Length: 126
Image 1 (cartoon, rainbow, N blue to C red):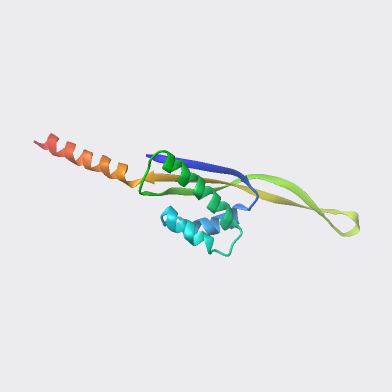
Image 2: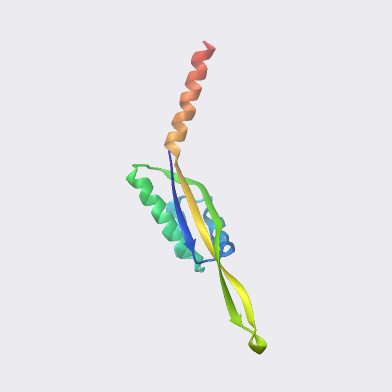
């Protein structure tokens, strides 16, 4: 079984979020939360919120022994801004926003499907 949550329009650049997301992809959600609490990046706070949301969704569905299937950080829309330049000119820049998509999977359901397939294969051989 898979559970996903999407956090949209986060006011942090995707590049900054991806640096932090790469650290936690291969960890369990509990270890990822613990690691992010001690990470000295402002993007860690946004990922903590997203992971807590997905874990809460999984617990309401009754899932146990959960792991990350995917952690995606995609680019959202951009806000156009400008800074004052020399001689009354404007220097444009863009404030980037991000979307975070986290998918959790239940290991037990995957293992059950694999064992069922092996049993069916044995029956077919006989």
